[in-house]
Length: 80
Image (cartoon, rainbow, N blue to C red; front, side, top):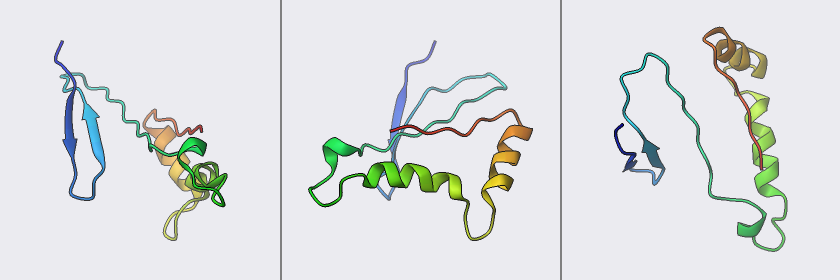
């Protein structure tokens, strides 16, 4: 089994991954933010952002995004 590798994108997003030969893949992302990281006056911001993930975009409704994920066996979930 290969070890995990890391890579940082130019925008600062850090990727942690493990190369595999499998036809199945898993992708998850974690934002290092939450109530312990919020300044006073911004309480609940991380939780709010979590919920906006499920609202869709200007080009795709939330139901379209979820449907496309499910068609290929994916799952869309979040937690704070």
